[in-house]
Every structure is written in structure tokens, then in C-alpha cells.
Length: 39
Image (cartoon, rainbow, N blue to C red; front, side):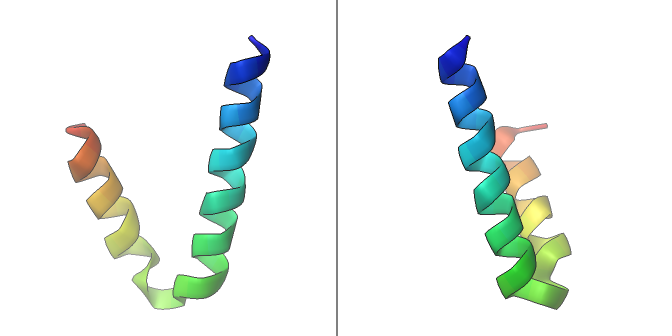
């Protein structure tokens, strides 16, 4: 279970960095992520 918590923390950090650096391109980034996951 600890591994999952670490993965979630890392993903959260990456998302925060993307939010801070991408600005107006956030929607495109999430769209690409969803497409990559096939959701």
C-alpha cells in the first residue's frame, strides 16, 4: 500500500508542476492524458 501512496504523491507533484508551468494549456494536457489512458 505504501507504494501506491508514493505513486499518488509523485503524480500529484507532477500535476501541480504542470498546472503552474502550462497555464492556459492545462486543458490540452489533461485531454492528452485521458487519450493516452484510453479513458
